[in-house]
Length: 368
Image 1 (cartoon, rainbow, N blue to C red):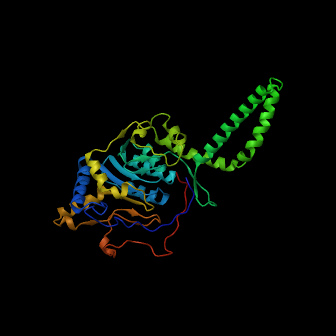
Image 2: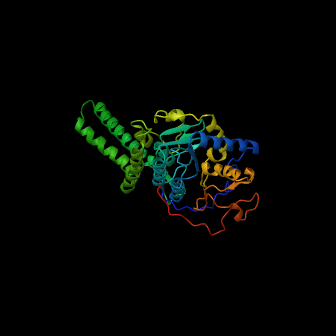
Image 3: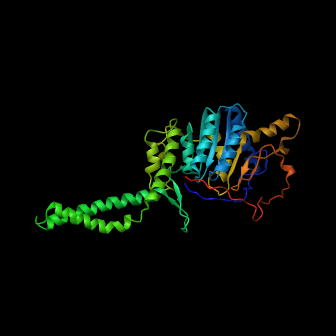
């Protein structure tokens, strides 16, 4: 987790779309049309809503995503969320997954790229976890800020591992020193005296090292670790195996440790592969799913792909329909469903951006 104010320009990719295809970057027009048809069939036949969230999980964007979920009136009881994230605010992640579970009886999350830390926390709350060959989760590791350092973030695992290593090495040094004293003196030095000498030696050797551990900082780390642990306990009854929470919090050596589908099966009860339709959808969304971005993008595909059909029913050409998904930048800007993009001046091929000095910094929140 980290406490850090951020401010970035709005994401521009996919702000406007034709028949739901602007999100389908990197595929041709015919392929994009096919993916759109698959999405439409998927939503209709399976009676499932379909969301995408790509980018850091932060409180402002989480609130907008929760609003999007709460506005749904489709009546579907199932939902599939494609999720790609480097992590972020665990409080925001908890709000997002709780909103999905309150709205739907079956929540499924598909991971086709990095889904770290706070993203992993969201998968714990899902009823089913879908993972592709390229999907990866990460430990529930707390990221802490170091404001006076060149690299501002550090892992809570660093402090705990440093303390564990110092403790283990100190005990080994004490034991070895005491045994050597007794053995080399041919019994002239008693065990008690040898223990006292070994104690003084080890204290003198390790006191400068352990003295660098700030007890206040250690308390902050312990407290922050409990956040992820307790949220996971509240969410994990559906799909998480027993003792998996402790493994996710303490069982991996680094924040970036890769938990692929095979490793995830040791932690989750239901880890499924994507079916053919889901693979087609994931392939169409590859630009948003395979890699993380500093910009945040999210949308409700069920609403988007339904608009062309509605216009077709009115006798209008479907290929002229335009819709605007919810797309948020890290400065909190967004384009809402239902707005008419033709009212907004836009140059073909240009990127939306904020003017210098306009982007506002959002309040920072703890990051996982």
